[in-house]
Amino acid sequence: MATLTVPTTVPSVSEDCEQLRKAFSGWGTNEGLIIDILGHRNAEQRNLIRKTYAETYGEDLLKALDKELSNDFERLVLLWALDPAERDALLANEATKRWTSSNQVLMEIACTRSANQLLHARQAYHARYKKSLEEDVAHHTTGDFRKLLLPLVSSYRYEGEEVNMTLAKTEAKLLHEKISDKAYSDDDVIRVLATRSKAQINATLNHYKNEYGNDINKVNKVGFWLFCI
Image (tube, rainbow, N blue to C red; front, side):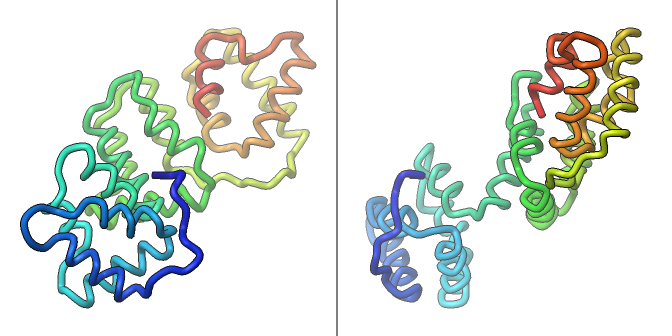
């Protein structure tokens, strides 16, 4: 679906809503018509369709889709119909319910989204599930994964390129001391990796390599943390 394009001339929102209503009527569901509409509208247009559909027919479009569709097709359409923050919220919720150490969905959301995108995902989670993403992460994960994930999903990182070289030197020394003691999950190690900007972390890692002659990425557990973020 991600490869589908928005047509040059798009029908009015009211017409899209009317056609979707028709797709749900009669015997069977016109899945092709649903794809033609929702699959060829951008996120802003889909949000407007959802709003207008609810105002016109007194029903949430997502609930209508849920009633009319089934199996994998339903899931694909529902995910596509959601805006990005709502989609992240839904996927994060699913991930917390079946958490395993190999389930990287939460890591992907926490580490690849911008600060604003992650904030919006947390807000969408709160609105959809009436609880916070942070409390579900804390409840459903354990051990070192929880220790790293909780600050990652809670943070609002600076995203600029400015770095503090004095801080980089100080925290490189701190990381070296903790790694020397094999304290890979120490609170200070997690704090540095989970809250500093990516530019600041890179500066710290470069100083670490220059000062101590080895690459911190090759330290087993810390290297895994860095791979995750």
